[in-house]
Length: 307
Image 1 (cartoon, rainbow, N blue to C red):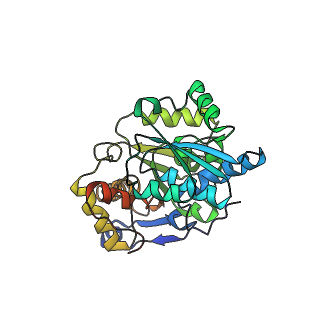
Image 2: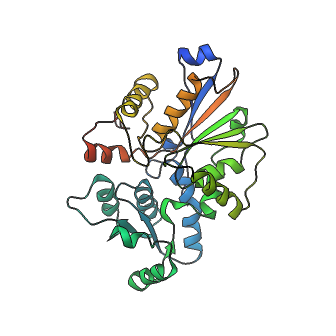
Image 3: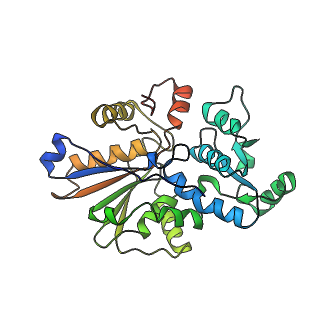
């Protein structure tokens, strides 16, 4: 069974925070496990237990070429001595990038499919075809979000976190956000920062909450204006913010999820969204392995955990 380290809470100090009378802290999920870091640890934890309880020694999941989920699943499967298959969007290109190379080195079998075929990843006929090819497997969806993943992400917040008035999370597939929402205390508000362009995320979250019958003592709000052009998009302002945040607080962020969330939080602080006395907890969801791949792809150097 995957076992986490305690996620430390790091309080930030800055003149703007002092001027506004606001506390800002970061819950460092990037430090919960040496390999399976961040929210992926909580998403995979109960899925791997279920696979083993069903007697399945093979898991199959989906992801793109720089996927944090693929990377974390390969690490978790290796730790639990379970065979892993990663169905990867796009053609195999040599040399493999750092994410896929690492996953393959851990024993994950990488099965590349074209982008049109990849769109069928939830179709029963396509999943049956994969079963014919690979035999029986335990399916974990792209991004890892399912009922067991949400059960895991409910455990991110603990009793010590009840003192915070606001909890902030980036949003991808919505599993982490949904788990956090269901574990809020009364008078807490969850702020979600979508990494995806478009307003559809409001309905996707509503559908997740309804599908898994999730309720909360708190409330939530989703911001869709900090995506910097869409998923995996960036500009110079975001890159400069990532370096400023690292130089100011010693915390590495990524440009896909946590960086955009932190940018949004800081922008809202400056614009007086938060009232004086607010206590903000930012969930650092990990995913820092992707910084290496980002630099490979763009040539733009980012902070990384080894610095």
